[in-house]
Length: 259
Ligand SMILES: [Zn+2]
Image (cartoon, rainbow, N blue to C red; front, side, top):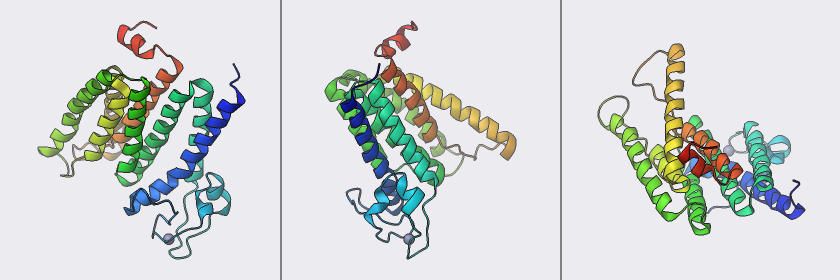
């Protein structure tokens, strides 16, 4: 089925808006600038940059120049990430009803942002958590997830959060509490509801443990060596989130094991 042109147009529009926000949010969350600031800044020294910096994909590939103050050049990877967000939004709008496509597009955008920042800087910026909370709120308003399911999802995430915090509180590893991980788990759980949350956190834990073991062969085993949990939560959420987009009865199927 070929979707109507106006639906594709909506996907393009959402894709452009999200893609043009990504590196801007990277910059303001790295520098600790207000999330309401709209003007582009150098992510390294906070020097104001021309507005053309916010044109997605093209800015990074063609007319982004070195920062005149500090000489910082945005990585080419940004263009790729923006391309992924843009393409994903168009796909979402062609595959699902607009209200669900909007949710999964914004969710994909926020989770990609979380993954990049967590892998790169060991932080999960609050601004991306706010996007996820906004998506969860929209989902509750339009009935994608019932309030009861959202709140019981929160309960599942709270249990998972204990497993994240407790080992760090008592002993092993450094003393920094992974509060970013906890916030991420609570936020996605609201959107997921308890059934999807259970699947997502289980898959994320398995992936994290496997990665910890695999990287152990190369870097040596130590309880002190941390594996960022955020990216696995993000990946698992997207896998099950896309399932929800493709199959309207996905949650029921997961619950009854009948596909
Ligand atoms: Zn600079």
